[in-house]
Length: 114
Image (cartoon, rainbow, N blue to C red; front, side, top):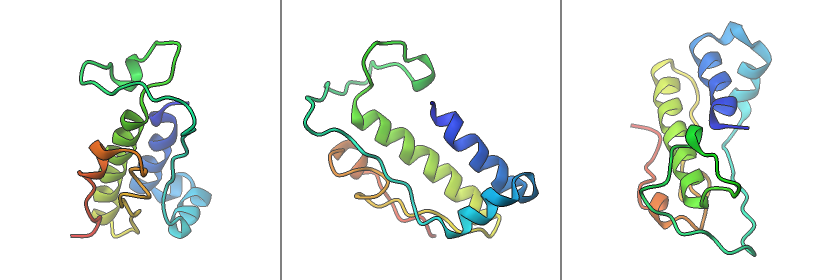
C-alpha cells in the first residue's frame, strides 16, 4: 500500500463529495490519523539521499521519519484543500501526525487552521 492508495480517495472525495458519499460522511467524523512503529526494532538512519516513496525498491522499510514526513506533507495539502472547500480538517500535532520519534517532522508540524 502506498500513500497514493490512502490519500487519492481522500482528495477525490474532498473535491467531489458525491464521488463517495460514505467516505465523505466518515471524514466528517474522523478526528485524525495515527502511525504505529515497532520501537523494539533498530531504526535505519535517515539521510537526504533516500528515494521518494514511489521509487522505493529496497527489501527493508524506509525510516520512520520518512513515513512521518510524507504523512505530514499529505495531511497539510489535504487540510488546505478541505479548508478552502469549507470542510473539516485533521489535526497535525507532534503526537498525532508526526509520531513521537520523529524530531525532523515534529519540528515542522503546524496548526491546521489559519
